[in-house]
Image (cartoon, rainbow, N blue to C red; front, side):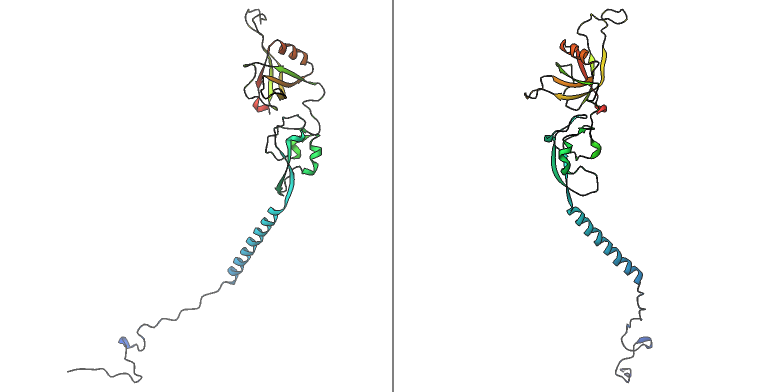
Length: 234
């Protein structure tokens, strides 16, 4: 015997458990809560970022002329025209010396040792030179190997030492104890080598007190002068 259910009046079969219509009806979902404050904050941050990027691009494009050092200038030396060059840099607000004052730079002295590639600032120069001022003198030395450090350069600071060539001078009555003494504790090297020659040949010019300059020159002529570099005094 075949048993059949009576179809519903609307033509749809009765679903199990008494539900009619589609077997899986979705439950109503509550509407999502909108947060206008967060949306406004996001828009504000986007605008701030865009404004900052625009200002950075505009600031990068704003360039000025500055003075760059292209050859080493020792502390206390007059800055020559050959040691400076014009360069275009971004305007960062740092007090770099403008190129329009380049003619005045050539009349100033280096307050510190200026290395190639350095952008010049006001604190790096001085209108007067204390190293070559009153009471100072420049002495030329002709030194041999062992009397000066290797790779000594213009702008270095050295000690000028008297080194006896033999045991004639004694200390405390002890024969053979040579008297060595410092003639100048800190001397600026103003030149290394012969300007007309490519080789250094041991020619050095240093700044010493005028009171000891004759003594340094005398000992140097007898080969009794040695130099000790003071890297920390630059």
